[in-house]
Image 1 (cartoon, rainbow, N blue to C red):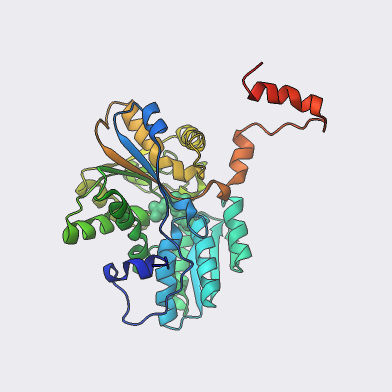
Image 2 (cartoon, rainbow, N blue to C red):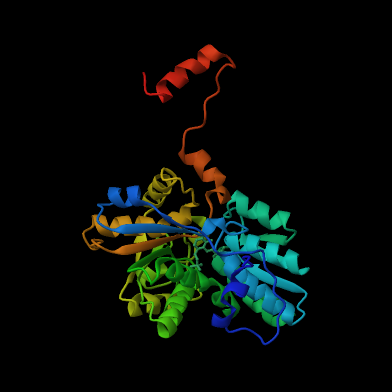
Length: 355
Ligand code: F0G
């Protein structure tokens, strides 16, 4: 049967309005890529997969939840949607709103959204407003505005977002035959960790697929759930998770505790180093998306995590193309040479293994 997106694939697992148009871009069904070389570099003796959510239509996992949130809004004949965003939610909301013929208003922190995300939101036709404030400021503003005006809030405070995002857990169980032993993922506003835990529990309750332990990973400069208090001025190179007051923080802590997992923090250097290592395995992700695996590496190295014999899935939430500037900043620029064969021969020789 042709694949038609997460609602049509997993509808019977979702709590949806009785009748609802389906607004979809055929999101979901993303690759679960084995990365045995990387597992070997981290000590070996375990199976490691990357759930590459950057392969969704707008380049991040947000599309799974947005198809449901926008479809539900369409069922109420809503004409406009609003969200706060560090970028990916903005691009996704803009695309699905365009698909539904709705207006999208996205509020982002000025100067802190990666180029590919901002470009996406603009290209899909959203009204984009940068505020002189953080994501957390933007979120409290859009919550207040959505209560005052007939505009649907499509941040992950909207429960329909979670209904869609939990389908990634179903896909993992369907592919592996059961839940993995561990799931590692980045944590920002904490909607995704909450969704995965919902999804795994739901599948386990009806199918006995088992439950993973969850390792949630924040960036050290934006780690309210690790510190145990909000962070007023969050900072990190992983701008997607530059969040100091996660809306679903309590549920994230609960998911970590109930799963006998934990939430930890890693440095920006660890995030960027894992971004490079993943790219060396053919998977290029944006910095935030490398945080889950950076956390796994961190725990193994510290001797706090014995991966032996385990099946581990790391969620890579967004595509590397979202944030091209970080590569320009952290990697050498390609050199320019004369357009002659003799100049290039020297380069070929080195690539071919001579010197
Ligand atoms: N990874 C990426 C690439 C993200 O864009 C986000 C969140 C996360 C991880 C964290 O997920 O918030 O559910 O814990 N981005 C939001 C946005 C905040 O506005 O695009 P979370």
